[in-house]
Image (cartoon, rainbow, N blue to C red; front, side, top):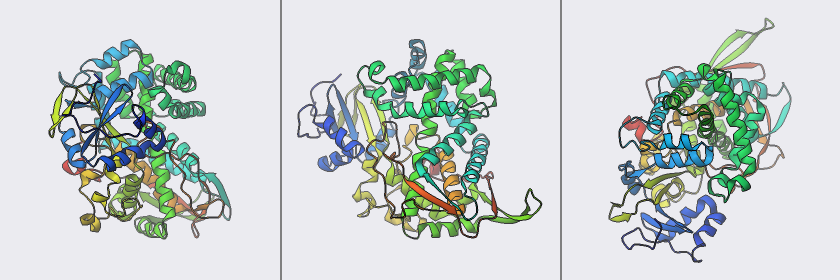
Length: 508
């Protein structure tokens, strides 16, 4: 497969060192390396050579859209199957089942196609997703009830640690139900240890030797899922959990492998939501005056009523509705989207299934094609001279003329592999951020200025930057809100909040 460079292929990106130069560059600059190369090459598509492999890198939204129109030739499902084999550790029998009609060339049957269909059905806006969302927002509200300090007191905590724990609990209970394996803290801890070792599993040499800790952690989570299925826990889970399980059972996947595949499924539902919520809260508080402006939006759509407390006294009940937030808080939504643009590091990946020409360039069979969101999101020609800055009002309707087309927002990927969980994760992030801001004041624990942590250790599966260290904060109850009780709802709505181009086009 890997050979010399054909002049018909995309041009080679130069390197200061032969053979290993790009590998060294990627190790040093991590997710920013593609951005650096894109500026150097200044072409819509270039070739990157690494020891033993070749990668084509796409650098413009126009070329990405051309790639997305060829989902069978430039395909993702075969890569997903390889990821499941190496990361989830499924058996050869399960690998064979997953490989059958993996790319859907023979229709919609087979484990790969049926699993994708199940996820899209369960996660598209509608009654099934609303059920999951309502469970999730209740858990978020309870976490904030527990977090809020007593009247006149303050609390210090690691912001990322608290968010990760709260979101892990809310997400896994809403997906897996009351018998979720993650109800046991040691299982949740094992998952995060496994997640931290993904790179060594994917690209390490002899992972059974060099990645023993993440493999042991993965196996522990898988055993917990196996017990969950045997005990009938999935029957009390969400439509997503039930439909994924049914697709695997219908294709005769052994139970042990169903459990292992669900560890991989946990990556999809957990890994990116906590860092996205973390950056949203941190960026909002770091930007002068922004929290006050967003609070005005949230307060304006918060319902206030008098309510009897357990001791018989009257108290104030404030109710937030997530659907209303999305409809009436444009600055909150713009800040959220801008935070994703600012911190997204995900790369959409395709495999070239046969020699093909793309816009005059020859793409060779078996080569990987990468579409890094950060190249698009950091392109000053698209976003303007302030591209490197967090600008919370960038996505407001009145600023549409000053930003590129919607296809340039790549935080959730795009095309046939557009993230199916984008609506669920958005609801979760907005719930925790809005309720946090409405209820609590937050400042750096050391009393100084806000400082953003470095992010160079973000793992290979991350779509959003992960902080290398936590940010210690001090929280107090918002002034004048000590005696307020809070509730959070989500009412049905026919309106879909358009996160990406495909939402406007109705392509779910």
